[in-house]
Length: 464
Image (cartoon, rainbow, N blue to C red; front, side, top):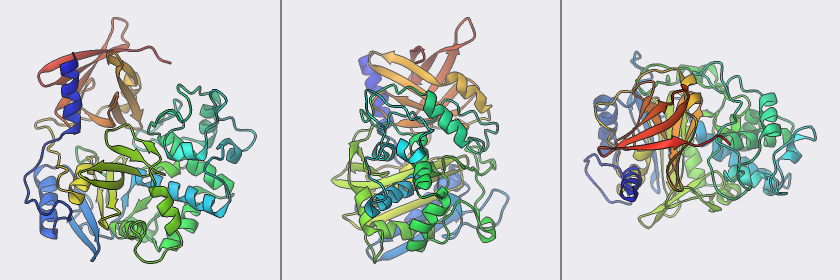
């Protein structure tokens, strides 16, 4: 069993490479090399419809794009094309926190309940309270998503989640571990942080981020509410099957992933993080770059919002994003003065592309062949959500996030899996699949991991 488990760990952390010309590992590839990667990804592998890459270097910025706004649109994407950036919004929320703390309006260690008002109950544990710092470093003990998150429309899952539901969850939830004990990525936590910061300033999240960050940085094409011009330039989101899907709205948990932007605007954001030019937010950005905790993946740490990947003698600050029909990546190397932005209008991850462009020693993923995602009713994911024990102290944790399903193995990051049928799901980061099984009573009681010609059963653990 130990040998089999190690095989899975190694498989997830070491992915295959596509052969392209390898340049200096510390330099971002030239435009033609990037363009060939995009052509391969879009035209050959059919993993997106339109991808825009932005690069910042000591000598300036450049943009490389390939593809269209939609499968049925002749309009090509470019640096001004609008995309949903998803969870990259979380680093904006972190900078807001740093800015308000620098101003003296609050402190990192302020308990979040103080910003929510006396009528809102926030869970505590062993006398400890959840602070703003816990929320932005994903160490609050709150889960990835609240258990009363049951969207009426899986195509726009956050749209009907209300503040009242958020408060109801907080009042009823019992923390399963001590506050600050470990890092567990939480959309709920950062969404709560954005909501609380806006309340503290008697405004809404969009107004707060616009006034304190976007306007001072000159990021006029970044927003939640789109202007008529932005709607004309919007890349239509697509599923992994490259079918058009709806845009997402996050009225309550906006701080977790509601922003939309362009590569040109995001390059301005990268340049400011790299210290280019003068900015009133430079000190606050520097504050967010400092590593605070270990992240639950080898070689990773977390600052305020930013994940920091150490490897090959370099530290890369990065964050990614994913909504129903979009994937995004933003990363930079403070020492080298380089940064990369990747925006795509499909549900297929671009993390490997972002890391590869920053350092070619990080390899491009070749998706497992001959596996096609099918459409299933995301409501079935509620049946699968839970914990499954593979071996002693080794557990699969399955969670639903809107119309997406994630699986996390102990000691591994959380990865999205895609439906090959109603019960069988596959990874795109490694050639492995998972099948969910039901007992005689019809309830899901186990899963089976299929990898390297082996089938390994993991029985479901009791809820709680």
